[in-house]
Length: 173
Image 1: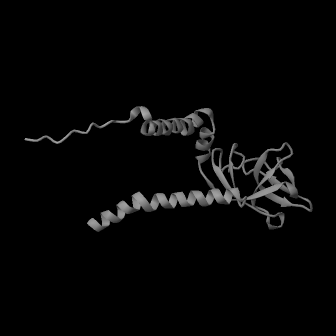
Image 2: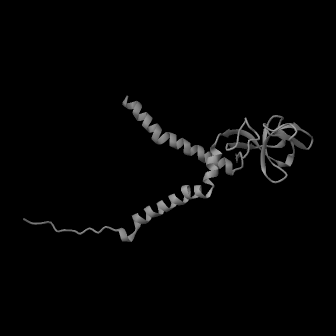
Image 3: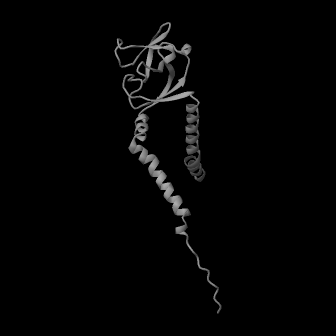
């Protein structure tokens, strides 16, 4: 029983946090190398596949690897990043549409506008990321901890906070 508790404690305190940190670093490296791409969904045009507030994880892909039914991320004519399903492929462009949009609302996407192919999504995390990117989130997650760390470091190494010890001679009896 004691060994089991020890194993659980080691898992909770060391292994699981280490694995999470490694996973986050790997995702960060893949993102900076442009092998994967993160997108926050802003509309429900692809509902029920994914909905607003989800984070999409996509991979870099060539236009030759796209087939009908794939979900792709592309740059539309207005310069916005859009993620829709491919419904048809013609000689020089894809025809895409959102899952919850009627069939008449299709978009013609040139092959050079293609950016990424959808892999999977994480529900509702996009709302948290958008909040962290807001002014209140910036203050809460970055400025407040930075001020706290500055205060702790200043308190520890401040010349005004040094304790002085007076040395006493041993008493003789």
